[in-house]
Length: 70
Image 1 (cartoon, rainbow, N blue to C red):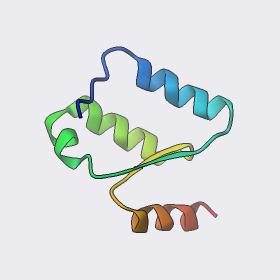
Image 2: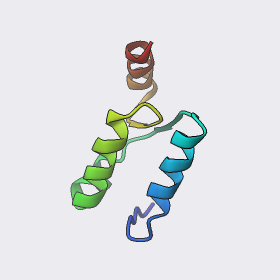
Image 3: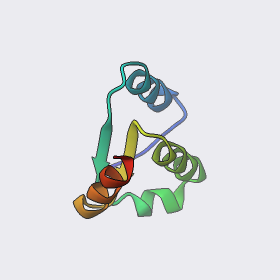
Image 4: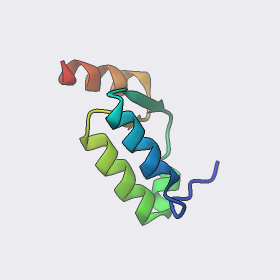
């Protein structure tokens, strides 16, 4: 899978989730792609700090984030 952030589609998508107060979790390891792209690494960090879109490597980590979010 190729991750490209140049188009602004990812930012627009995140904004829709925030606007409509919908949470989305993407479960899967994207560490290899993040290591190859500073922009993707920044995007992942920023989205994971918020409460609407999370990228997590597995379901255990998702459970931890959900418990922490209350």
